[in-house]
Image (tube, rainbow, N blue to C red):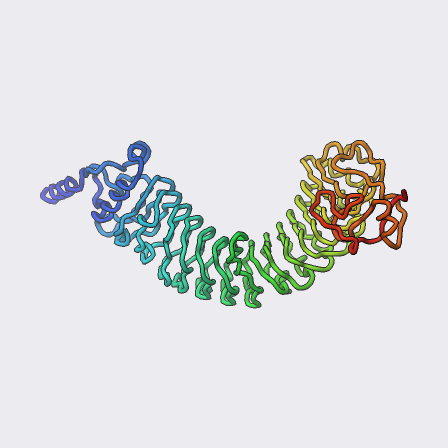
Length: 499
């Protein structure tokens, strides 16, 4: 009987809940601070279960307060998780580092500013998940040395974090590092190569510079890598050749980088899991490697503005899962490969602003998934093939951009194509008269097919054609929209009508 009285007495002391082990006093104090650091407490009381009740009748762990998880050690409960994203918080307790069992701190999309964020968070040895993204932490500087042995996830994107990027990373369990769209400066530390469990590394749109560390070749589990810095920033310096050691990044599925030089030949054989390959602002010497055609899982390939030269490898269009291909604004030449018709899953294609020549391949009409095709600002000649009419039967909307080429005629049977599909065709020397159903185009009296070895006759007739760029407006040295100058020195042979 005596033992029964003792048990009942203990239960009474613990608030009458019938469960032994209330929340640790210190942790409860930290939660009370958080409660008092909100802009709208009436909202909290209405929507946060348990919060706002400071009496002993409500316990954060035993009563399962909203956003709180706990662990039990001995006869005491400790807070292990604070999960309060988008909850109108403006400050965290300065002593939060003392919550010795806290493994998750998720406070993204709150109103916490630098003055309300304790630096002790970055010294918490138990923390596994940290999310401070989408806040206004202006002037928050990360420690030079980050020593958090259990940290697995660090999310801090779009929070105005600035200062030097940490040099030393003692984070052996780190899996996700997402600090994009901040104001971090400095160079990529080779130390991150020791975090061999890293799966996501998103550092784009900061102010980082220098070369890619060869040590990142140790990141065999890395799946997503994005390092492109802002185009609007003077710190567009994180642009480097791809190290040979990166050949062992066997798990890569997504990569977005600024790089230059030659693409390593190993990419097509070693990065077999790659689904998206994006190069922004690169400067290349040489052609697009045919080894890329071995990337059978590739869905998106964006090599725009990279200064590639040479012809487009026809095998690119045989990549079975390719959905998006952008090779625009390079220096590619030669014809568009007839193999383009093999890209049955291709939805968006841009080959604009190159030096492509030859005729439009009839096989383009076989692209049954196409929603957008941009071939403007090249030197394509001949007619728009009748086979293009098959594109309108795809069952979805389609846009076609063929402006500023040297296309001169319209194939037969395309009335429905031009009627129902949006297209832009201006800046081409179409023969007159044009069919009435062709919109966004004009015909040129200069295009009768008469060839001349010099420009003199054409100039006297008020006709001119640039070998680089669009058709000159008749009687001028400019293109139709005045964007292109057209000095006579750059005119090629003309086709025009005398008088």
